[in-house]
Image 1 (cartoon, rainbow, N blue to C red):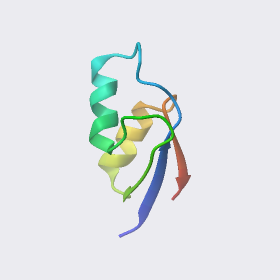
Image 2: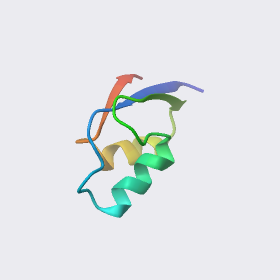
Image 3: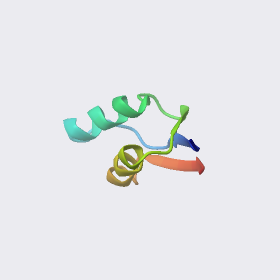
Length: 59
């Protein structure tokens, strides 16, 4: 299956708890961290909810 690489570009400070939980679910919790995940509809949906906090690098 294809991989997608994402990077956290925004801080979770002063964000709703639900957005913080989505970041943790994606494996991100500190600025400028990068993770490589399977490209699934669930991951794409989580990224779509946080366009102001994450950036898609590849995929």
